[in-house]
Image (cartoon, rainbow, N blue to C red):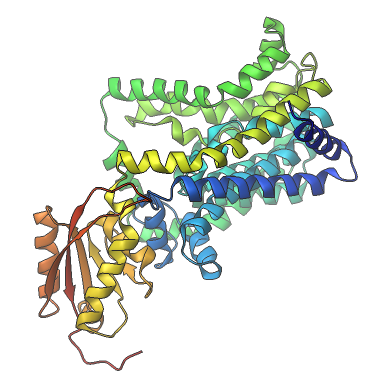
Length: 508
């Protein structure tokens, strides 16, 4: 094995163990980690384009609100802030996506100082980078991704509030809890889990006699109040959507999905778990101490880990909801504490060196193979809404400019196609599917474009009907093929219905 990588790993370990350098070093290491995975995603997905989940959030960010039909608003808010500074481009979006796990890992680093010695802290953060939720899956920015740092922050502040009864940490725990709910309603399992951890702990009497839990609850409710009002005003529309998509399923189906959720979730954490099992020599007593520690401090952390992870297995069949293991993405904040905090788990310098080398090698290897992944994705044929989004936006722009010089303001039609066009169109228009609808006067003043798959007659008819309300329109059928390097793409036909503004307004 070449000596240079080993020397670099030794230098990294030494810096992370040095009290004078470790905080600066971990930030630099996470910055490099973020950069490497951003490069990987930009290259590996260069033949695919942005996922519809990502372009949908760009569309939402053009209609900033306290809530949306499907989810609460934090993911869209972050998009709006980010793209006010950075261009809408694949690389910048993947950079935003990778900041979510990077921030979560930094919070884990801070939290683990309360439970692990310096050597184990280094191993712990390295092990988490081997969980796909902190890289591969995090690259698809969505409402699950933003929960990574939010759940980590809520867990950190709750545990410190519980241990210290600090009013500052109690208030921060309330703010973080509200932020989690602003991210995704799934966060209710975290809040219930942390409440269970507080109730089960032997020190609960002292905690609940202190102001801390009530400060947390009050601050959280005050912070969440604007969204609760929005929910009331919109008749709890996101809950209706969730029930329609995921709810009212047969018990057998929900039970199977719950088991699949649990098996898949544990599978995602299998690599770090196996590594620590090797360090622990697989001794049953050590394994038992990992899962359910004897001392109160570690048991509180274990409960805070297990409860949010396992609660959905019980709740999903009870309420008739199907769940998926991807929803456990934000549950792993305390994994390193759970695995490494038993005193019998000994971590030698050579173990740290090997684990750091493995963690550092993974993103480097993925960057090296990313062109091959891009080619394989091209040959498999990516989804048209992903692969053709930018090209379709160019076609829409060309068709719009042929009929009017006014800015394009509204795009409707197939939801995924509308979101893709909105993401890439230079006029930064609004998407209409699933979002607040403009008035007839606004549509008449600004016009619209409807985009559909050519074979989707229902979408085309709806688009033509919407266009007819504005005035004369034009439908263009365009065939788009996205080639990648020397590899041909699959052609797809699209219908573009252009209804230009009816009213003569001054050009902007």
